[in-house]
Length: 205
Image (cartoon, rainbow, N blue to C red; front, side, top):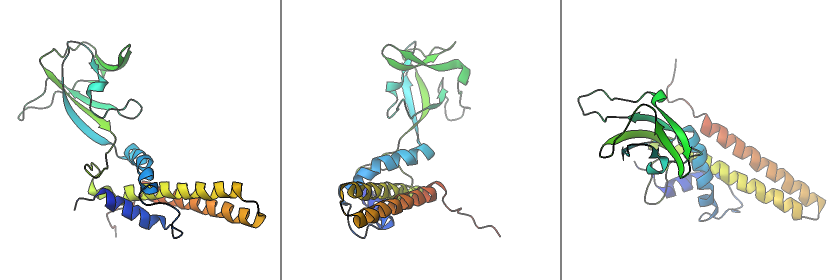
């Protein structure tokens, strides 16, 4: 089964348990998706493989689709690219480095040249995508990401009650909103803990 964006948002809605219906499904739950994807990708980034043309010199990281300087990392570079029957020729880490050139971040090769007309195979990490058209999150992580989304929704609810307490005059109301804000913050922490520590798929005797 391939889960859809609506499946994730629906499960997050169920896990959040916003019985007062303070959050708007079409807006607030979607707003929670981006930070949830950041949390999820920090644990399970997307592995991308891309063949990049050589330049006789540096290769800009902007050539790597989806590469983000503050998040992604190059895991390996293969050159020359092997055929199906050959052992991959991965360059040792000592043969390349990140270098900040005036035009931006590049991969600088040390003692190796990837000439124009040839290609090097890059394996690197990127963030996952979850839209109505594209989903790169494996189905096995449906519950994990749904809990990250729900945790972000609980944070929104905590902020709602905390901000309401700051605008309320009656002391009794202030105490209520402060307590509700703490409850939702605790709920968010519990969901994040569950997402980061999923139960084992194996049962040991």
